[in-house]
Every structure is written in C-alpha cells, then in structure tokens.
Amino acid sequence: MEGINKTAKMQFFFRPFSPDPEVQMLIFVAFLMMYLTSLGGNATIAVIVQINHSLHTPMYFFLANLAVLEIFYTSSITPLALANLLSMGKTPVSITGCGTQMFFFVFLGGADCILLAVMAYDRFIAICHPLRYRLIMSWSLCVELLVGSLVLGFLLSLPLTILIFHLPFCHNDEIYHFYCDMPAVMRLACADTRVHKTALYIISFIVLSIPLSLISISYVFIVVAILRIRSAEGRQQAYSTCSSHILVVLLQYGCTSFIYLSPSSSYSPEMGRVVSVAYTFITPILNPLIYSLRNKELKDALRKALRKF
Image 1 (cartoon, rainbow, N blue to C red):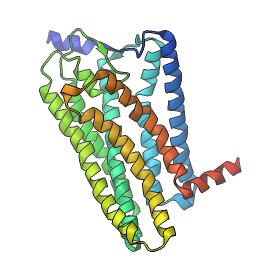
Image 2: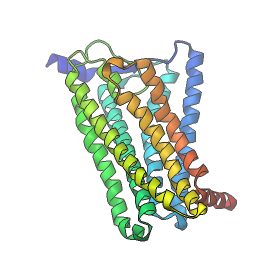
Image 3: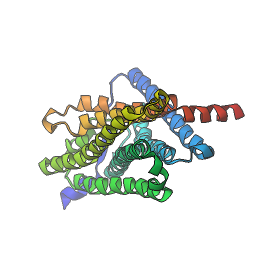
Image 4: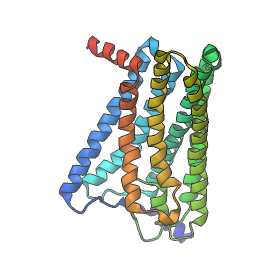
C-alpha cells in the first residue's frame, strides 16, 4: 500500500535534448514553428472542405476529419514538450497527467491509423466500383466508419494505459523522451514488465499491421483497376487521388512501426526520441502539404478561398 501511495504522488520529468540552453532554445523554436505550421495546414484543410460544397464528398469528409485528428494528436503532447524545452526539463508532470497524455496520444494515433485504412477503402470503392460508389459510400456509412475508428482507438488505448500505470515506479523519475511514450515510461518501472511489453506489442500489431494489410489489399485491386482504364487522363486522375494517400500511409506507418513493432531488446531511447519527432511533428506538417499539392480540387478550392481575401 505504501508503494502504491508513493507511485500516486510521483512526478516525472523529461530529459532535455541537450545540456546547452541555447541548443534547447533552438529546438524549442523548431518545435513551435512545426506545431504552428501543422495547426495552420490541417485547420486550413478542415475549413476549406467545410465551406466548399463541391468538396462535400466521402473522400474529403475523411480527409477533413483526418486533419482534425492530426490537430488534436499533436496538441496532446506539444504544450508540455515546449514547456520542458524552455525549463531545461524541469517542468514536472504528475503520474495522472502522464497517463492522461499517454491515453489521448495512443487513442488519437490509433484512430488516425484506422482512419487511413478507411480512406483506402473509400478509394477502392471509388475506383473499382465507380457506378455503385454513391450507393455504397452513403453518408450514414461514412459517419459509422469515422465513429468506428474513434471507438477502436479508444478501446485499444484505455486498457493499455491502465495496465502500464498499475506498474510501481520507484526512484528514477526522468523519462528519456519529450512526452509520455509507452516504451520510455515502462523503462522506469521497478517491476517485471514482460507482460506489459507483450500487451504493447500485440496492440501495436493490431493497430498497425491489420489496417496496413487492408490498405495493401485495397491498393492491389486499385492498381489492377487503374491499369484497365483506357484513357491517359482517367489513369492520371485515379493516380493523383491515390498517390497522396499512399505517401501519408508510408510516413505514418513507417515511423510508428519502427517504434512499436521493433523488438524491445533493440529499443534505443535516443533513436526512439528522434523517430518520434518525425511522426509527431513532421508527418502532421507533410499531410496537408501532400494532399493540397497533389489534389487539383483541393488546390482550386484553396485558390478561390484566397481570392476572397
């Protein structure tokens, strides 16, 4: 009981990237600029889709909701990360606050991965069954798929977060990371974590491998359908709507698989922190850029909106 009470009163600190305050300030400025760029880009996509009736289609519905998810996803970790960069790692976070951050990060990240699989299914129906597209991808089904992504993310995140924070944490209170990431937090536990590592691997496998398999299967059928299109213009249009999604999938799944599906024995805290920067800051910036640069309808809608101002 005394150990539980000590754990409940614990506070964690995040290890600075560098002992040099000037380097920390440079990283702070870089993180802040990336965060603001991500917010601006994703908010722009969400607003453009909302105000343009021509974009009120299932594809853009999912794209706008992906952008909103990215905003909340990055916002779940950035404020605390920025505060710690300014304070040289002296800003504490309670065990409750750390658990809350971990829950929302995994919940929103899991929903993000599942929604990418839903978007692949939408493209599969649009290209392989164009005449039945509106019938199959009804608005009720779109909403159900979105809600299903959120519910699955919630159901995967909650038990894992509870499991990890039932571990006893003793003396070491420094997290070798810039947010409460699961592998980094588990390293601080003064107990056997084999069950927890196995649970993390299984859930990561479900969140990453199964949706990625569905995406891959969808694109096999999509590629076959594109090759059957006779007109070069038709092939180009189909390619442009899919290539941006493939790039985003590769970025998101590649980085997260490196962290969560690598063997625990090969886990490097330093490498984990560097790769985490890629999928928590860089990927949310690239998503709106990739979609807007490779999507003619979205570019046209953005130009029209800018002309009004």
